[in-house]
Image (cartoon, rainbow, N blue to C red; front, side):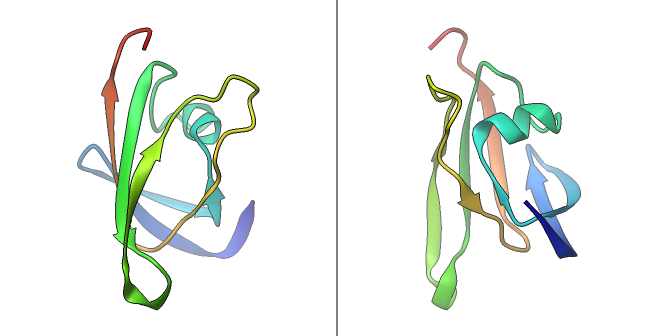
Length: 83
């Protein structure tokens, strides 16, 4: 979903600008941020400035977990083969 402001997120050490307000694993593949066989971890400051971290992964039904994007979020994508 598109928002009305541009945010900076970092994927594997490279800063990307996006106007998306949320992202799922499949969106990241479509946007070229990571590959279909990657496992993606993330971290950032969530609501109330509490630490927010987790994993995004390819879903079997194409309806993966949606994550609300925050300014400065950091994503690490690692190729895990067919896992």
